[in-house]
Length: 325
Image (cartoon, rainbow, N blue to C red):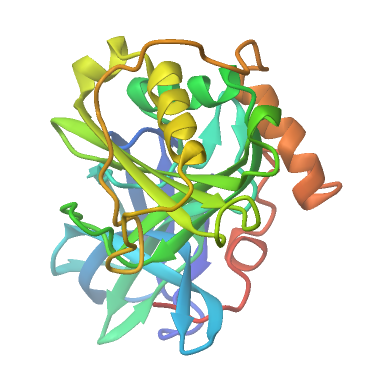
């Protein structure tokens, strides 16, 4: 997408800026390439800097209340101070490294409802910053992350929702101050024992942690409690791991416990589970693929929302008028 906006600080006749992404599709740890194209106005101006920033919507807790804020989580100065002459055209090429922990927005061509990421361009002139509009960015899972999502589909899970939450996961090193949660409804064999499963990826250049949180029902247990598990493998080992067996084995283990002996530390995902291969029966195999799972689950979550919708007005419909973090 190309956007064009006059700098309000300079009024009529000021410079305008277009940002062009050669390909808006990327993965965690990938690179976005493009150009910032600046066209001079009616007079010479001093440009202080040109900055790109990745922005997403983050759920933040304030006391007993939760609200969504627009958070910029990665910045790149693509050009320092320079003088732009009247009517001058200047193209600034860039390569923008995407953080490994960037949330996933698209899975096999299906948009995860509620997930949005944009690339924002800031042009600073005479101590005034024009933040311009946003170019949408589509973040697809890493191959290892796709294998985990495929395992959820194979086991018969149903996609429920996805969001980004402010906070950190106990026991894991994170670069970003938030994490993504992808929520699933469990297959039939766990009905009445587990409410939902939340999946979080924390990746880096060497591998990834797969963090699971199971919300267990009360009644059969002494009370409803959460259980936590973590699998941490290299990218290479993740591609050969039996994710369906590992996830299914962990679920049967926590579902069979009468009482959880593992606490919830730091607010999120405190329990570290097994990270080996599990043998034995894997109930619920033969489910739909993850793309169909997302599409089917989204119908119940967001009603008539069309997956993969076009950003018609990124500056408003994408982020609305929420506060910025």
